[in-house]
Image (tube, rainbow, N blue to C red; front, top):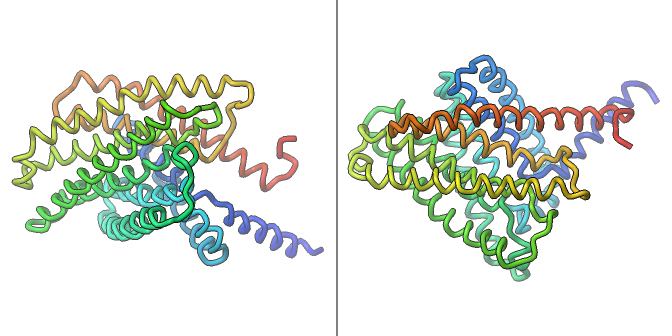
Length: 357
């Protein structure tokens, strides 16, 4: 076989990997993007810029693979879209779009961010109502312990990602449209809060009243905290936008109370999640090795860092800032560990000699 034919065959085999692409793989973009933003807030500008460019490349690659999967492996994609455990993962694409646009705003690329905002809203509408309508009308459904994971909270994260992006873009839009965009951001914030209360009740019920083994504690359960962290961030930005919208000004006590509630609820989850991580990974059957799902754990750590910075600034709670100063290193360490695992995984796939026995 000629070298060109071998290369072509390898390329086709790699593209076939798109058939098994996890719908939640956009958590890679979510995690990289928010750690970049956290680095910028912490004063690590070179790291932030490097992660911005890396994330732009990741964002494009994942959309190419997802589009190829839609065209070439539509049945596999539809099977995921109608499965209780995998369907919510598609909403990571909405959150990733929002985080990517957030990075572009910080970089001054407002037109690109505006385009992603419009795309993200359309994607949110299509995916949210497709997924929830499909899962509602299905005749055969799993029990709650088999059907629900932390990935369901991506419904909250995606909603709050649009809320946050809307609030950030409103600062760059002239009146009276600025008022409308702020109202959209407020509405999305409240919708996200409604979804969190509904979904977290089911997750907590699953924790307490069904058998829970180390295999059941998947990394996506870190979104229990991450969903509250992004809600805190969106609420904090809206508090800062109060001067631009009369209804936000009138709701300031409510916004401040709910924003602190979001932050406190997210903080409450952290010790419990750490205990469960230790319990799972010190179990002899679950060594710590790379899994794409770990990006779902990296994102909440970065988001908690950013939301703590933002809330301490918006509400003059300076005594909280040291928490964010510590968590930025935790987020960077977690991102580095996951990225090294990803690189090793890709290298072993491309170079068979590097594959573990």
